[in-house]
Amino acid sequence: MIGRVPWDVSLASLLLAFAASTVIAVLYTATYQGIGYLRGFVQALALAGVVSAVVMLAIGDDIARGLGMLGALTLIRFRATLKDTRDLIFVFASLGVGVACGVQAYSVAIVGLAAFSGAVVFLRVSRFGTRQRFDTLLRFRAGSAIEIDQQVQTVLDKHCHDVSLIDVRAAGTFEQEFAYHLTLSRAGSEVAIIRDLEGVNGVSDATIFKQDATLEM
Image 1 (cartoon, rainbow, N blue to C red):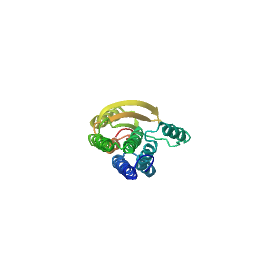
Image 2 (tube, rainbow, N blue to C red):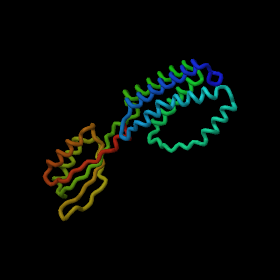
Image 3 (cartoon, rainbow, N blue to C red):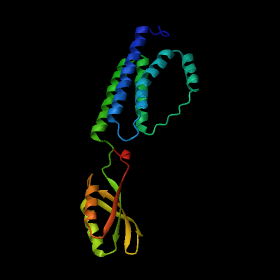
C-alpha cells in the first residue's frame, strides 16, 4: 500500500493519469499554431498529470500531510515563463486530470478529459475568436503627379476593404515615400497589390509588412 491506498489502486491511478495527460499533450501538439514550439513543454504536459496524481495519493485525507506538502512546494522556484495563456490552460488541464486520478475520481477524469478535448477541437475547427481583418502596412515611393495618385488609389480600392494614409515624407527632389495602413478584402492579396503597384509608371520600392500571424489565428 502507498499510505492507505492499495498498490493496485495506486498503479491504476498513475497509469490513467499518465494516459490522460499524454492525450492532452498530443492534443496540444496537434492544435498548436505559431512559432516557438517546445518539445520540453509537451513532455512536461505528459508528466504533470503523473506528478499531481502522486501528490494526491500521498496526501490522501491527511491534513498534516497536505500542510507538509504545501510547505515543501513553497521551497521550489519555477523559472519557466509561459508566453501564451493557452499554454497555461493546458497545464491546468493536465494537472486537473492528475488530481482526479489521484483521488480515485476516475469518471471525473475521463469525462473531464473528453469535455476538454472536445472543446479544444471545436475551437480549433470553428476558428473561434478569429478577426478576419488581414491588416498590413504598405510603403512605396512615387512621384507627386495626380495621375499616379489616381492609379495608386484604383489599385488599393481593388484589393482593400479599407485604406488609410498614415505617413508621407520627401524621398528626393521629385519623389515622396507613402505609408498606408490597409485592411485587405481577402487574405493573400499582398502579391497582387505589389504586382499592380509596380505596374504603375512612377511607383517604386513597394513593400508590404504583415501583421504578426501568431497574434490572431
